[in-house]
Image (cartoon, rainbow, N blue to C red):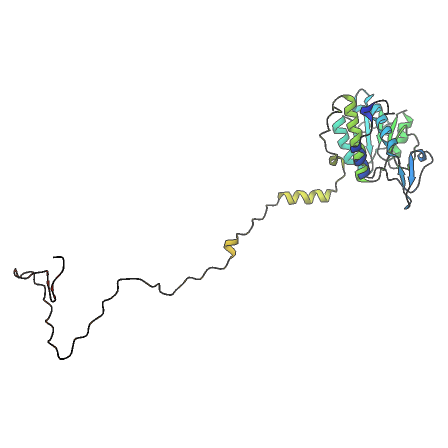
Length: 288
């Protein structure tokens, strides 16, 4: 299908993403209408889906979605818990009408249901086995159906089957993300030359308990690291006296025994005019 246009060829980057998300891993059983999409079978018993057919059917589904003039006339539904987040994200980016959760019986056929009744022009189902009520009512009103089908999925009333693993979280999110990307590219909203800025992680299912734990962890204040200097033991102060270095004290010369007694030092008498202040007991001080 995509061999005539190089822009529609499956790229290596998309192949790596599909293999990492285990899009090709099918169930142990296989329906006779899905046997043509099976490439081989593993020793464990799981059938492997040929991702070439997955890509071609995905492009065909994108063309059918783009053909609907009003995006709100496209209804995407998922009763499986793992696909509800992908359904809501697909609807927010493409403008489709989502039904995440339980499908109300008679929403497509009973006109008396004023709040739940709707008349879409195209239906996208994540799992035909869980969304069988919506698919059956779509057949009553002649509504075309696009479905993500595993190897053991029933293809009753399914017009376009995208062969893939519709039980794994990452596989469902990746296929819906790629379908939304191709729809926007065919509409001209997103260029094929540029990478789509929306991350595929936004289409993956997240456990509400894990989200609540992450929210609480983000709101809690970050602990302040302890100061290594404050936790160290205080340095004891030195209590010993610090030695001082002053002028040397002159040694006292003992008096000589038997010699003449030394004269007493002259006393300072400022009232006596004849007293010389420069005179000392040993004589005149040098320098005077």
